[in-house]
Image (cartoon, rainbow, N blue to C red; front, side):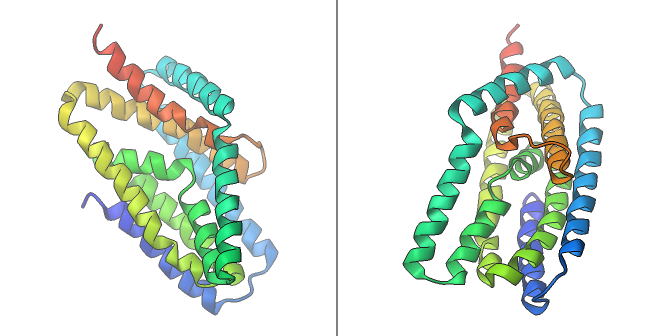
Length: 233
């Protein structure tokens, strides 16, 4: 099922959020331990994806160009600023934890590289592994967030599903008019570039680095463009 990963992600948020409504208090040291384990797992997954790369030079060039674009336009800062603005405005307008939980949940579950990498991977080659990993992470994040923001976090599962589904559908459309051999190289490049980004996410979660991962997102699409461009030579 093409949307299995997107559906699993939404269900994980709902179930995690529902449990969070029951467990209103979780000790900080347990929260920290959960985040560290998730960080280690993401690092492991990133390494696995990078090791399978066949054109590491294109991956490097894609990341350099992508990061430069992200840094110049300050993509991560723009995403964060937009999210905080939405949170403040909707929170003030509706005056309740529902809107705060909804917007905060959307920022955590949608604005990030894993949703894009996972959606592209699912759409291009039917592989939901990244989305399943994201679902597992989001389950625990939703559990913790709901104790603070309430049931609005659970509602964020709806826009999360449609966001990832839109990426999957877009990737499928790309696959319809690109030759199979070129598509295979694109998939390989998405996995390699995405693997490096996952490494960055994991290292940030472990507090080893403080990289602006949001600014790396353009590298995924730059890699696909480079592969397509090189196919003409």
